[in-house]
Length: 421
Image (spheres, one colour):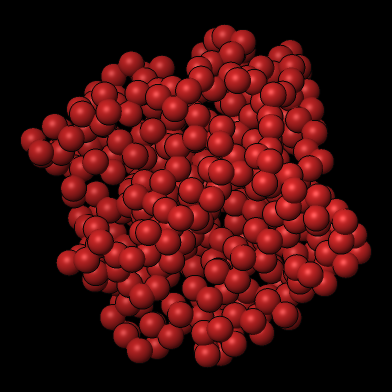
């Protein structure tokens, strides 16, 4: 079903109608004031200290953009308030844990593997594929949502936070019933790093969910070292009582911040997936449009496409500059073409393990072989999209991404097909 056929569930339309009727009083009904959110989080936890780095400046920048630019409906305001309160409570609880248990901060994160690449270039599939190896440790959605108290190995599969996360996912899918066909979600699935970065309020999670151009512009000026510090703190929390042999992490947005990533994780290894940009842009624009429509009644698809094109052209430019600077040793980067990943996933995994001198056990190989069969592309329905519905001109975007395409795709920027499923 094309996104032009988007229909909001009836109950959601009624709730948002109530929000419109409230008019100017909506801001008092769902308060998005930073001081109020901080006070509420402290009152609900009985805790005072958020730890370092300071989260207030970034939170205030985000809230200003959400209230003046995001064109939020009532569900959108409720989502922002709920999400930010969750993050604030997490920071309070994590700081309490770190003060009481010094062993958390002493945790070492050694040779993590980061899956990076343009959004919709197979990063999620590869990340979740690698999560099938019992020797790999990934952050699951429920852990990224509620990292405190530190999960324990003995109760990891029955932790009550799993049910909380599943309820959140079910609510989201009631509001966006078509989202699952674009990007499968679930409490027990491997989650990407934007949810970890959100604990600093310096995260690309927020400008994916909401139209907040001033926050996006501010975000591009940050060096992200503080955000990666918080990212590391979350991993230490998750690892303390529930370790694995190695962390496997994923987010396309790491491309923007490789210097900060490598300053935090100097021995990190990178797996960079590559797909024709005009395929990724149309697919990403459809995902972003579907997501933003949950929180706003004024999403214009032809605005979304050009916004994302400019953003991700800058992302790959920064990543290529980081490679050219010598920041990343060539033997710590593996480039993976998307067609190869889809054609033979196990062969790609073997390349990853060979490049980084890792052992692939027989048990892991069996589970890796089964995963694509159990999770076929399109199992939740067709995902249809086109460049034109998102205001993207193929010739213009091919020119914009020409340096990337020339370097990694033999100069081929154009989409393989008008629509993908």
